[in-house]
Image (cartoon, rainbow, N blue to C red; front, side, top):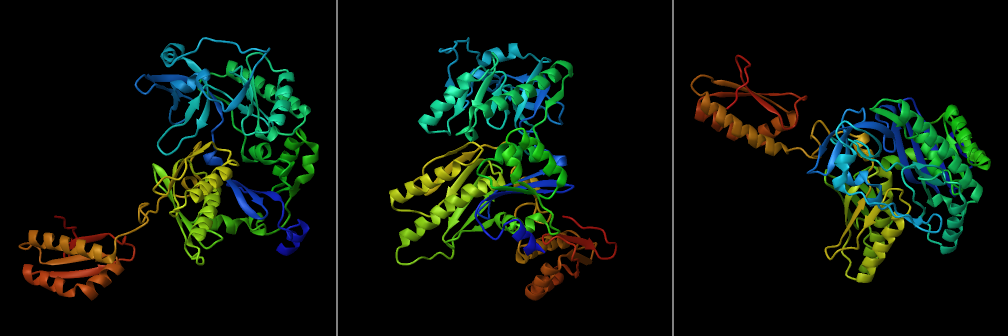
Amino acid sequence: MIERVKRMLGLRRKTGNKLIISVEKLERRVALLEDGGLEEYSVEREQSRNIAGSVYKGRVKNIEPGLKAMFVDIGLEKNAFLHFWDAIPAALDSGVEEIERGGRKQSKKRITAKDIPSIYPVGSEVIVQVTKGPIGTKGPRVSTNLSFAGRYLVLMPFSDRSGISRKIEDPKERARLRKILRQLDIPEGIGVIIRTVGEGQRARYFVRDLHFLLEQWARIEEKIRTLPAPACVFEEPDLIERTVRDFLTEEIDEVVCDDRAAVDRMMDLVGQISRRAKSRIKFYEGTASIFETFGVQKQIDDAFHRQVWLKCGGYIVIDETEALVAVDVNTGRNKGGRDVEKTILQTNLEAADEIARQLRLRNIGGLIIGDFIDMKNRRDQQQVYQRMRERLKRDKAKTHVLPISSLGLMEMTRQRAQESLSDALYQNCPYCDGRGVVKTAMSTSVEVHRALNAVMRKYQDTIHEIRVILNPDVLKRLKEEDEELLIELERRYAGRLMFRADPTFHHEKFVVTDANTGAELKV
């Protein structure tokens, strides 16, 4: 049956880019396949909906001049953090080339951090947008610089700047888009950015997109006027709608979804943008899981291991800590031939490709350190650095990477708007408490000896029979390796030791009790 579905959907050929969407009761998943390989992966659950991008009408609860920040009640469990600089539109670098209006730039009085407490006193209402969702114990981070992404444009209602994404590098194309931007009927006091996906698009697409965004902003303004603070006045679209908005480009050959309602909704959304794109959306009617049919599930399982293998036989090891993410590169099975330097370069280049892919797949953010295999040739180091820069260009999150240091380390940062996928999908192991290791049987047996020595010395005149309850593996070690030491303890304190194995006991846990009363004995 699966093979028949594959033939029907054209899976025999591995070329082409596909969006695979799985809609289930508890979660929605989207996978981007490029020539059959998994390149993007997103998960959304109803109870943990991503709020980054949502807009709230909040109320200032308190101001912390030392932190140069204020805390805003937006109706969530934790107050939002608003830095003074995030409340100053003129101080932000938007990452776009500014376009003059009317042939000249208007000069305005520059607002400084000192002005913020008087502009937003405690108790005042403020309109903010979430730039980073709650992570761990921290509340969301917000900004007063609102922006709303459309298909080809980004609308900035509180800014009068307009521009073009710097990722569009062709001078001729920038000049063409600049001309289109000046012809758009943009209301006074509102700014617009042409997104990277707008490259090569006709003027009518931008006109239509601007119309949709202005209508959306009008509805938000109405809610701002009528709803009391705190209130959500705009909710970032769900995963399905964001997928249509951000991924459904000319580069996507096919979108396959296993939910009829989601397919109909995507058809409606796409119909407003491009009627031709509707033909690329298909409903999956197979009985097997859509992710199994398209080979996505196995790739997900392989990709999220701590150790990820490379095609050349090398591998990378990814460790996420609270402060940073460490990625170690190893040659593994890739011993190569006589040219060792060529083998090392090949492994490092493949590692750069995989690291950039893993950052997107796992949604890893913050500070990232890549420990590449040492390369003596500076030219090889530069080649790996340029490969990493090239691969990071396709990342939608903002990234910054530095050249390989003399220690063979590559430092980089990646924008973190929400928890990483591993934080969202996994929790610390209740057995090892997130350490990833437990004490050996010998280490625990040493602690047992130490505890027995202290307890028998303390109770040698009152308690003569002691029972120890512990894990079977540790008991086996005590019987096979430490029997003489236990007999010596009994002789020294004129007592009797009894042991009982309990399979439910943690490998490191043991309890020393009075054998007659069952009371726990502690030093």
